[in-house]
Amino acid sequence: MCLQVVIAALYYNPQLLFETLEKLQLSVSSPTESITSHFIKQWIHDTDCFLGLHDRKLCVLGLCTLLSSSGVRPAAVNECASQIIPSLILLFDGLKRAYV
Image (cartoon, rainbow, N blue to C red):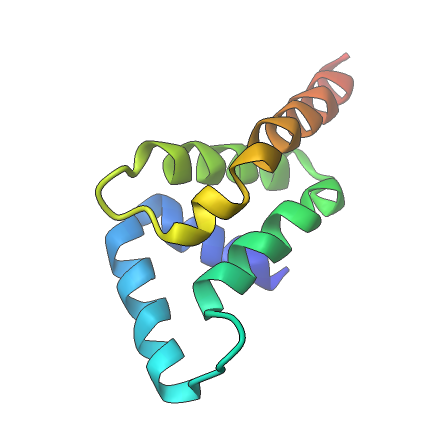
């Protein structure tokens, strides 16, 4: 899943990822929505599609990194802030079921 690669990049180096996404935005120049915003919204929307243990763990780590990166946090995170905790709960429930 392509989202997982971007989430892994976020976990590894959030600042570099957001800088790269912004550079891509400048070259694509979509007037309606930034690539960063689209990525975060798609990620939150597809949280239920992370089925494997590794996939869910990476998703949890990525969301935690997103929440803890106060200095480089994009505005799109604030737009989806009310959906992040329910997404984490969904992921933790899936992990709980996988280990039982």
